[in-house]
Image (cartoon, rainbow, N blue to C red; front, side, top):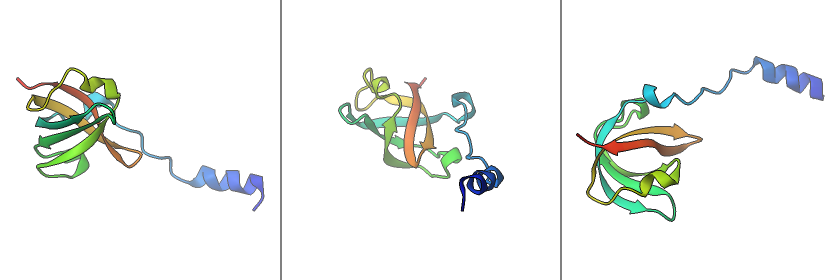
Length: 98
């Protein structure tokens, strides 16, 4: 296949879905169980994550940006937003639960 045929074929493919804006991602209640500042990961016991099709459970997420984890500690009750970004479950916002 030559370069021009490849470009034409690519134009016919559907575009990759965009990651939803943070305010469009549902906030979920959770409790921080473990923090790993070095790897930028957080383990959270959480309620249902409807946008990810997951029920309540405890699982680890990457934090983007990792610096958002600095003010939190294990046992903190939070509300957070998570998405799947490039195949990685990622927390995109955290705030204190009310």
